[in-house]
Structures are given as structure tokens and as C-alpha cells.
Length: 404
Ligand code: ATP
Ligand code: MG
Image (cartoon, rainbow, N blue to C red; front, side, top):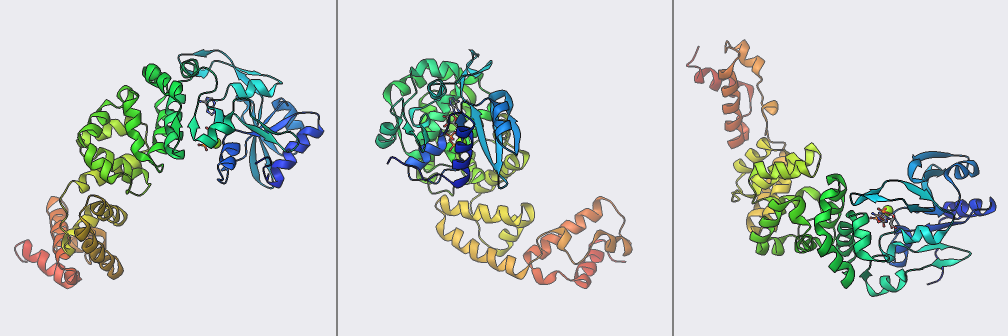
């Protein structure tokens, strides 16, 4: 392959920069993905123009990461990141460089990139600029650090997680020296922020090779930031090996499968440490807890599950039963679930034919007892949906109070 079919806007950006006397190339993930026959997610452009120069060349721009040299150029309302060639300044504490130094040489910019497959630049007039044989590594399916791997991981320890994440996403091998350098430098990952680690970890878990999570463990990285998962993965190896790949590529489902045998308190600690959002934390804990209960697919149990969680969580629990091997139970539960949702069965206090106010009007005082009556009414209706009528429930409530 010697030509990339560039989108019109990308060609326009490159030629506009050229016309103004600057060099410009597409670079990084988009070149890699194109060579792999995948549609690039975004088209990143690298240029000899300084950020201020880029802003002069285009009518519509905004600053995205100006301190890193990135300006977003808007063409037809779509943003393209245009970044000035840079070499990284000195790295301290194995993360982000202290400063960014702009350069007017493409070679410097390519040399600071992490892996050979991510260090290829391209434009129509020069074709591919591939100083580190990234194209050959792509053909061979190899992830290889640009230059000396140990040094590169000491500069920025996140690159070790990135190597494992790309390996899982692309099904590539990590080259021997690069792999050895990961093992040797694994402990440096503790200097990296949890958000950055989490992003790579989630991408790995959602990839086509989620079992590569065992590589994160084997290389010694996992023990540095989530030792509790490390031991669970060991203890549950058979179950996880059998089930993880067939679990839909969804953060909550895959995390629940990985963590469901940890106590809820430990799950929460771990999920919070990974700085996951509240919704995800709550859903993983709920799904894990429900997965751990042996399935009992009766209409009452399914309605109860909906009332205790939600419609979508119940759907997920039923799905996970099937993943865990309870195929028949899951099929039956799913049939029941579909009927319940189609019929609109009452599965919450809010859907009851009576409200707290109705009961107060009947002379039942507000307070704990009223709450108990509503809950008992719901349980009755979960068992027998046809009992969800005002007359029936009020009559029953009054009787529960010992009659009027
Ligand atoms: P993805 O498809 O997941 O976005 P990507 O390769 O585009 O993959 P980005 O994080 O978007 O990854 O980074 C864009 C490019 O910047 C990379 O291709 C690589 O050249 C460079 N890069 C990103 N992170 C690092 C890093 N930690 N060290 C060195 N180079 C990096
Ligand atoms: Mg990218």
C-alpha cells in the first residue's frame, strides 16, 4: 500500500498548511488503523507550524491542549486535532514530561511516540514516513517500543499498560525486549494516575481478547494497583476463562464477571480506586450480587428482582445467568421477563393502585406502619398482579390494621 485515501477535510488542512510554508502529515492511530484496514476513529495531524501559526492559517480553530501544542481546526463543524511537532522535555516520576519542546523536525516528533506502529506519518506528496519500521511490525503483528524500551517505560510508565491494551485490541504479540522491559519496570506503574490506568484497563477488558487481563497480572502490573483482583483472577481462573470472552463487551457486565466473587465492600473500594463513575460502581456491585444468587425463574422472583433493582438490571442479570451456564433458567426467565414488561405488571410501590395518601385518608397514620403496609401490598401484587386494584388493596390494608 502506498497511498491513503484521505478525507477531503484532512487533505484541505494539510495543503493549507503546505501553502503557508509548513510541513504537515497525518500520524499515529489513524495511520495504524488505516494500514490495518480499519476505519480510523479520528485523523490527527502533526505539523511544523507553531500553534499560533496554525490559528492564523484557518478561519475556525479552538485551543484544545495548547500547552501540548494542539489546536483543533474546525472544518464543516468537524474538529481535527493539529499538533505541532514536539519532543518531550524531561520526564520526572515516570509520567508526563515536565515540559513540551516544539521542534521543526518530523523525526523528533516520531521518535517520542510509544510504539513503532504508532510512529508512522503520511501525506500525499511524500507517502509514508516510517523511521522505525512500523509498517513491517504491523504486518507481523508486533508491538515494539520505539528505541530503548526500558528507557521509554521509565519516561512514561503508562506505556506498559498501553502495550498490553493494544496487544488485546489488535491480537498482536509484544516483542521480546519490550515485554521484558515491562516485567522489569512494572512497579513504576504506581506513579501513574488511576484515571489513565483505568482508561487503558477498560479498553483491554472491552477488547476481543479480554483474557489478556491475565497478562496485566503476569507482567506484575496488576499487583501494583489492584492486588485484590489479582488474587480473585487466580482463584476464579476456570470460570473466568470459560465465561469472559462470551460476555458482551460491556463495562458493567465484564467487570461484574471479573469481580463477582469479591465481597461488596472490596468491590466498592476497588471500583472507587479506579475512579469509575457512581453509576458504574453501583451497577457492578448490584449485578455481581444478583449473579451470585442461584437463579429461580418464577414470575414472582423476576418481578421481585425488577422491584429491587430495575428493568434493565434484571435483563442484565438474566443475561449473566446464561453466561454462567444456567442456560435453561435464563431462557425461562427471559420469556417471563418479556411477558412481565409487555403486560406492564406492577413492580414498584409507585405503580401500586394505592398510594400512601390513599391510606392516610383511610385513617392509617403516616409513619413506619404505613410503609410496612405499602411494602406488603407490593409483595402481594408481585405474587398476584391481578390484585393491583384500589378496592382490593385498601380493603386488605384496613384488615391489616385490624379493621375500622
Ligand atoms: P486509539 O485508537 O486507542 O485512540 P491511538 O494510537 O490513537 O489509539 P492515542 O492515545 O489517541 O492513541 O494517541 C495518539 C498517538 O499519540 C499515538 O498513536 C502515539 O503515537 C502517541 N502517544 C499517545 N500516548 C503516548 C504515550 N504515552 N507515549 C508516547 N506516545 C504516545
Ligand atoms: Mg487516538
